[in-house]
Length: 427
Image (cartoon, rainbow, N blue to C red; front, top):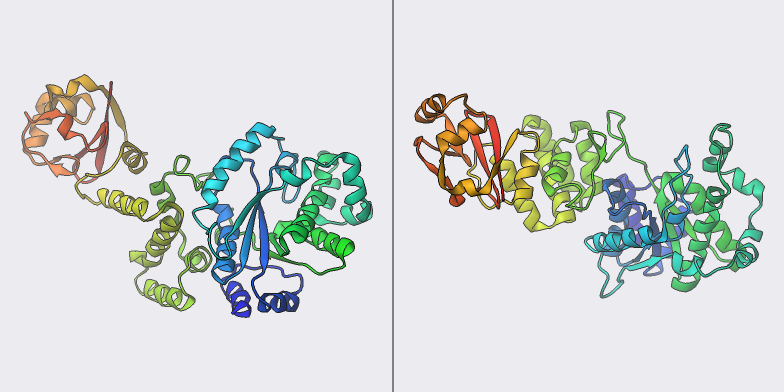
């Protein structure tokens, strides 16, 4: 089963480098094995660039192994030079702690933290923070030569940049991550470290430290650094990160990111970011190829990933919101839902007390600028061209009151098929 797991992950395109393929397979065959991946706490939320490592941990847990999510409270205060051309802004301890708490809640959506082979969440500040500088030099520093450290690509590239260089702080990062692996090897019998492909130097440093201090073997895996078929960095939408926090990227916007996946990317994304079987994915993509205009593969991808990240209830609301743009009557949505769906639609702010029985549909059209005058508004309504929350309205004198709202404080006007306007009522 474990050997099949490693092979399946490779077939899904989720693995890049493996330190000792046969050694890892032998270890996995011997029974449940512990592996860890580190997460950067420099933001209050993880983003979809973190999904691949999270999915890797989830696959291992489903196969009976034990995942550790290491949230870098210590390393997050230092900064990793890997994949960077400039120094990171150092965070305060309070800021790191706040981010850690948020990330803990997010990771709990993907992994089981109770029961058999329960996942463990840990913070490397717990064991690195109490160490003195002398302790550090004696227990860790003596095992690494400077020659060894500057030979690592991430460090060498920064050293060759005369304008930027690398600080001693970031130069030390490799040793911090190596010590994480040693600590988890000793305390949790953690045999495998995984991370992004740019982490290979840090991972192999940890393998070397485990070998030098314990005489035992440990292993490393890396996952690919994803880009889209057009060469853009995966996980960006209009230049912004796509966050897992619903407050930072709404479930509707999250769903839309996946719906817009290029046909050249969608099968790869289905393999990496869903738990669908490989045969089912192949069948789905074959059907998609016959009718690409229906975007069957993108719709399934968006639904599966949104369900995993935000839950079934959020997915149902997203699908409902998506139908709104195709003329479905608008009910059961919140202000946040409507704001996400109609983010690019013009809006007008109106006093809430106008909903006390004095505002007519005719006046509303004029005040929102959907018509230039009351007379034009009446003709538009009587001609059957006006919709309130996607319901056709033929009465120019229709009173707009609290019952007309589509959400807590909004209603949606439409003229014709696609001319939308959002009316926001504020007290």
